[in-house]
Image 1 (cartoon, rainbow, N blue to C red):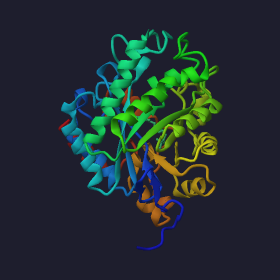
Image 2: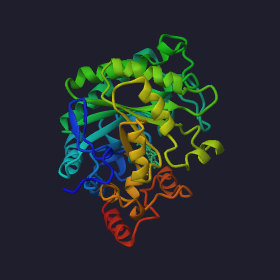
Image 3: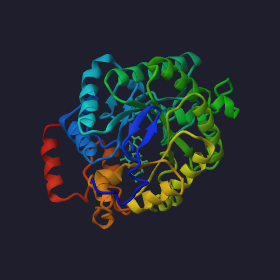
Length: 375
Ligand SMILES: Cc1cc2nc3c(=O)[nH]c(=O)nc-3n(C[C@H](O)[C@H](O)[C@H](O)COP(=O)(O)O)c2cc1C
């Protein structure tokens, strides 16, 4: 094979014993492609087969629910019972048959759960709803649900599992001084606030044994009085000490995503790289950065400058799965770009609809329409 145009981007990397063939990963992207109730639909399988065929080294599948009580939407993939394992096996296989490593992200949405009685570390209102504060007994039950879900991910044949500590979901809610106002040993001091994520990691690792566990890290809530980058660096070190395989760094929560300053910032290429750069200084485990890394030249620069070890592409890869192959040839200008002016995918999934990208070519739209008919 010809020498790649971007040598850093195509250099293999070992992640906790797993060989990634290059530095390109798909960051988790919930698009509402599972059937109602989280069924592994033909559309979902075809979508991930397409993403894996792109040439990316690792595909991190969107968040999957560890319990129906913590589900973020009706089309969220489920891993809260062994009856979901056969479907998950198909999903892992669809990715691996295209020569990519398959990871599944597992999640409890906490105060953002779409349930009648959402739960959270503390009763802090959000979007007009106030969650109920968890008891210590319930916290223990949820930790066990994470561990059981991670075990199913392993049994289904995935190569890794990722804990969703981003987007302001339950793991992040415990770490944050904004959402965690508890007076017991799960709240107050920094060490108490990170107790729950660390306990979850330990239980998950005990359950899966020799199997890589990654972490999506909320590195800055971008909210006054929220979890910030220095606390995130300290949490990263603690996660590393407890054996995390990698940290996938992101910023913002549903409470900050729509603030004018955050909206403006997140239109910029590589807007979350400064967060990854800081976390990378704190740890030795691989760090993934995502966020409008639309050109391979930018990705190469990030790796070369040691701002991150791996590149995460979410919408960027979905809009144009040719990204890795065009990158290999240095054909940056041929890549179809996700427009910073467009928020269509987010708007569609928030309405409970499977997402379509306005930037797709006719052929992809036709493929998607045909697949939707079978959803
Ligand atoms: C519609 C949508 C769904 C997303 N779903 C997830 C998810 O399930 N888990 C997660 O950790 N991040 C999720 N993200 C965040 C992405 O992983 C990523 O950090 C962000 O979109 C920036 O990367 P990009 O510019 O390549 O899309 C989602 C983002 C969008 C827009």
